[in-house]
Picture 1 (cartoon, helix red, strand yellow):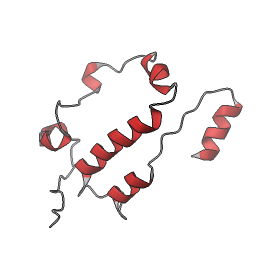
Picture 2: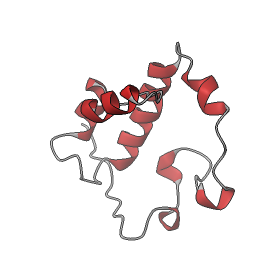
Picture 3: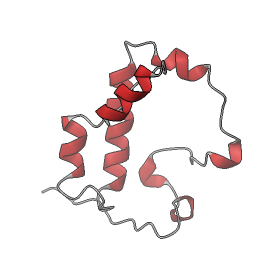
Picture 4: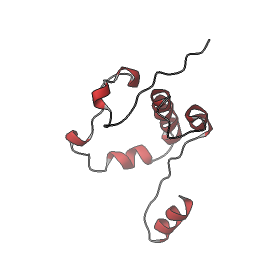
Length: 101
């Protein structure tokens, strides 16, 4: 990712990288493609990304970008754990989050 970002920057393109932080990686676990902790991963990413960009110019820059058509952005309201299965991409399995004792 760094190589691609450097290449784009060399062409004059402004690039902002958003990558998982340690907390995100801990929540994802060893198998980053697993859907077992999908909701917890989404919740954590929403918070850590907001924290990463809070003191930057990125929110203003993003606000000035064209919005995606509403039919392309399907985000049910509420907590991600309450989203209906129909709102997820086809073939997505949703396993319950592991319970802690």
